[in-house]
Image (cartoon, rainbow, N blue to C red; front, side):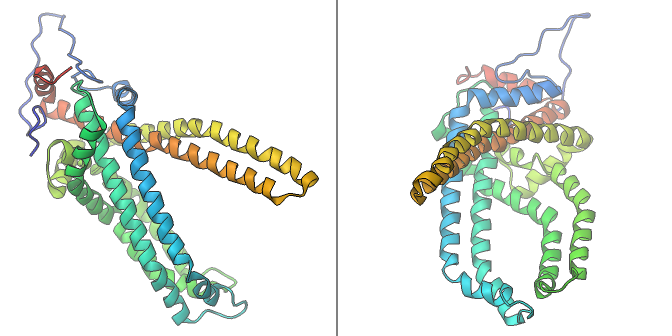
Length: 357
């Protein structure tokens, strides 16, 4: 259970007093007014939270992504040492189908690397998913946010958030993993056939049929990470609370979340474009001088500059692409609690306590 005021269990909503046609404006101690939110309030509030608290958001996101990239790269590098012979035994025998033992050997060799990569990605996702509700929890009250406080807050709630991600992942993606595991051996065994095997069509049909169910479940439990962080609940209880909060507002939730992801993609693309142009400009002189100097080092230098610019742009763009949609979902959690449980009064009281800004 959360020990911060204003974020505990729900209480009955009571109408705000007013006189005639006039009512006082709702208080706004932080990034949103403490009333039921409109579309602009949610999208604008998330943008304001990102702008005000960009330092801890950017710092933690870049740190988690950097460590994850290094660990995944190390795992792939270690796996590459023994991959050549197993890969050649399956794919580099023209006119001859691969032996089942070679396919199993390749699959078993890659499985530990894939498992390690998935574990690293899940841990990073848990940390980043816990970050945005923790930031919104303070931004709504108008309180300052620091890197150290957010890091400790994320670590303390990451087990519960990880549990939510794993449970939702198993519900939404588990059937597809089972289907893929059943179809993968048949697809690999028939890699040299002229026509695609029936397993390919079964896999595609299964994916198409499951996608609507996956979307419905994903939105139904999309507020569970915010519940786990703000209310201190465990994974199952957080998922139940999310289902209750989303009920009656599924279409509104999916619409606003979709707009948030679309906006994040556009802004992330805009952030990346200057680095793309810079990388191209660094590569063009190397290409132009290569024919005159006949020096491969010049081309290599240009390629390195291009790759560095592309990676830098991708990393910086991903900060907004990762953080902004999660901030929007966290504000949707606040909005649903304001609408269904009268949270605005508790938040206004919490904002007036010592420690507010």
